[in-house]
Image 1 (cartoon, rainbow, N blue to C red):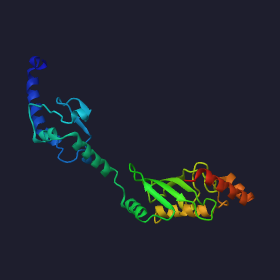
Image 2 (cartoon, helix red, strand yellow):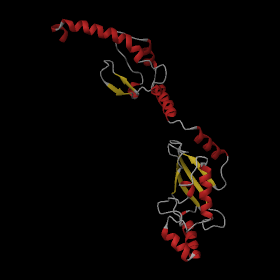
Image 3 (cartoon, one colour):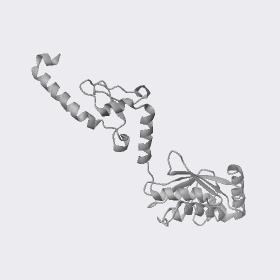
Image 4 (cartoon, rainbow, N blue to C red):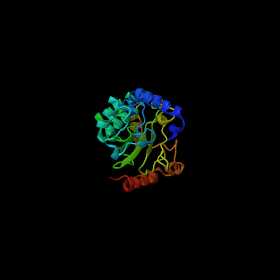
Length: 244
């Protein structure tokens, strides 16, 4: 062994063990959720030299450090995989906590849905919404159900939501990518506006297409040259792509 040829190594090793015994209980204190307080979800092997992820095989990890057995290490030995997964899930939920503004708006959308509009947040990311808007009565889009996707950026409500059509639609203010030309999504956005305001504005845009402020130039041209023919095309697209 190395310490046989270097007597001072044995003394250093003993000092190291004493220091390890003193600091290990503090370094390994997982009495609270480790991920929630910034600890990475990794555990050490018994020799404290190899870090590895916590796996199913480690449901009951061993810590065979004979020099010391702290109460905290004994606590870790008693934990199972379910406890660890629960702890990690809680930490992830905390990290993904939403602003109260978004929570309140979502609750209102679910409790007081806008007639003809549904907006449901994704389970895995509450900033994403699956939106459906029914075509207004007496419009070229009547009878159609249009799917959209809506995303709330990190700086919402200082910046407007990102929203686009997923369903194909023949409309002068919606381009082929589903992007929407709407003033409240650009220059006229205000933090006082809400998600439901945007959805109502889009619903109103379906009822009153505006070829004078187009995003789809070819559709706007058709609308201006022959409005009745353009309306007929819009109805055809609605029946073809937006019929439930």
